[in-house]
Structure formats: C-alpha cells, structure tokens
Image 1 (tube, rainbow over the protein chains, first blue to last red):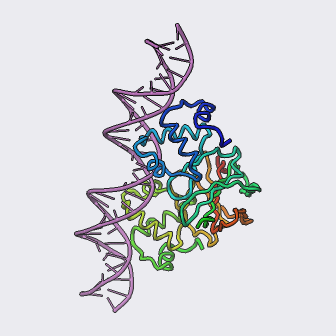
Image 2 (image 1 turned 180 degrees about the horizontal axis):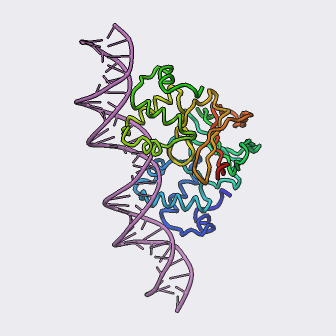
Image 3 (image 1 turned 120 degrees about the horizontal axis):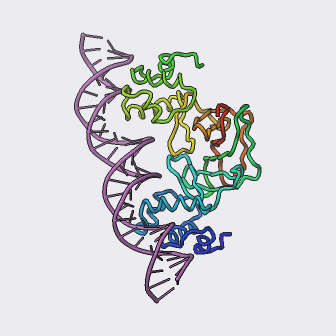
Length: 134
Length: 134
DNA sequence: TTTTAAATGCAACCAAGTTGCATTTATGTT
DNA sequence: AACATAAATGCAACTTGGTTGCATTTAAAA
C-alpha cells in the first residue's frame, strides 16, 4: 500500500497531478507522524500558499489519502492514511512530552454503552501519555 | 452537589465572588450541556468581556468547577463539573444532528493496549452519533 | 475605613482556517 | 501539437477563538 508513488496515488484517486499536490503528498509519505498546519507550512515553505494548502488537505481527506486528527491541542493534525469506515478500531496517541501524534490500530474494538435513545456512529479515542522515544 | 448556590461554590473554591463570576456560574448551572465560547458570549452578551470570560473559564477549570471538552469541532466547549482524576471513566457524546455535547459516565473503564514503551496517562473518548432528542 | 491584591475592560494582537476572484495549469478533445 | 475548459493556484481580505499588556475598578482582609 505504502509502496505506491505519489503520482500513482493521485491518479488512482482521480486527483489532478499538480506540482503542489505532489510536493504535499511527497511530504506526507516521508513523515511518519501526524502533521499540523504549521509543520506543513514550515516544511513546504515558499512552495505552497495557505489557502491552497487547506484546500488540498480537504481534498486529500475526501479522497481518503489522509485523515484529520483532533489531538486536543486546539488545532487539527493531518496524517497519511484513511480512517477505517466504522471508526471503532483506530486511536490516536498523543505524547505529552514531544507532542508527537501516533496512529494506532486497536486489537479489540471499543464497546461503549450509551443511554437509551442514543445511537453511536463512531468512537474516537485520544490516548495521552509518554511515547517510547521520550 | 448541584444544590449548592453559586455563592457557596465560589466560596468553597476560594474564588472571589464577583458580578461576572456569579453571572457566568449561574449560567453554567442552568445549562444542561456543554457551552462553546460563542454560546457563552451570546448568553451573557454585554455583561461580560471576552478576555474576562476566557480568564474566568481558565480559573473555573483550575478550581474544578467546570471542565473543558474537545468535541472535535475545532473549538472547545465548557461544561459544569469536574473531570474525574484518572480520566478513564468519563466520555463525551456529540450529537451529529444538533451538535449538543453530553457528558456521560462509563460503567466500565476503557482498557486500551499501547505498544511497548508507551505509557498511558489518560484516555479521552468522543462518541459521535445521534442523541435521544433528535 | 483604608489597603492591596485580584479581577475587570479595553484595545491590540496572534494563529488557524475560510472566501472571492483573477490568473494559471492539467488534461481531454480535435 | 494546439486548443478548450474545468479545476487548481495565489493573493488579499476576512472571520473566529483565544491571548496579552495595561490602566482602572472592586472584593475582602486588616
């Protein structure tokens, strides 16, 4: 899956292969962890305009190339890969020491009881702690 | 617990009983669900200044009168009541239809396996779905 | 009643994210 | 290869949540 080139990925998703998109996707493929807007802006410096960046983050997300993570920092982070359909078996780990966000698959789906009349569509979990590197 | 007056609550937490704080706390006691900044600003209109509001939200949170919720909307919401110490047995339900945020206690604590070397301090869960009213 | 630290209001600021619009570019068609 | 066209880009201006510095006001202890 990860061995596709950015060109191939864009093509498969039916997105036009522009300079900006290739640079952005290239960056995502290199980065192991979730990226904030400022991470991206910094990394792609003069190469990319603010609004173009946001518009591409949106289209990448819609195409299932990346997913958007709320790590409870107050802003969003973006990571390569699609969120699983049911949303039950994917969690995000936020290192309180280095702020890195890790995507992690859960072996057992979360089962949460909600009161009568409430219908659960999706469960999103943020685990805060300290990562292996810190 | 909920039958304390705002005056009593402020006194107990060692906070000065100012006009603004009484109005804000009064509002929180009336509101069943989590409030966003704009909810509060709207409700307390001319009564309260932006920076004063934020400063008081911070001190209320530190005093354990309210807790701050990240409902994945991109901004924070604030709700009456303290977050439990370990953070493991409290979840937030976000109604995708009316955007209301409900606090709910979990009967069984969430147990999540993290990879070797990772240390979990706290788990925060957002359940998205449709509430009983919708 | 006086004193003083804490709380308030105001203006100015910052960063994330959005929108409208004119220009440019990728791609499908001749 | 040249053309047409819809989609993508860049720019500026904007919105909103949230913060900061500072002078003024106020709660409450002495």
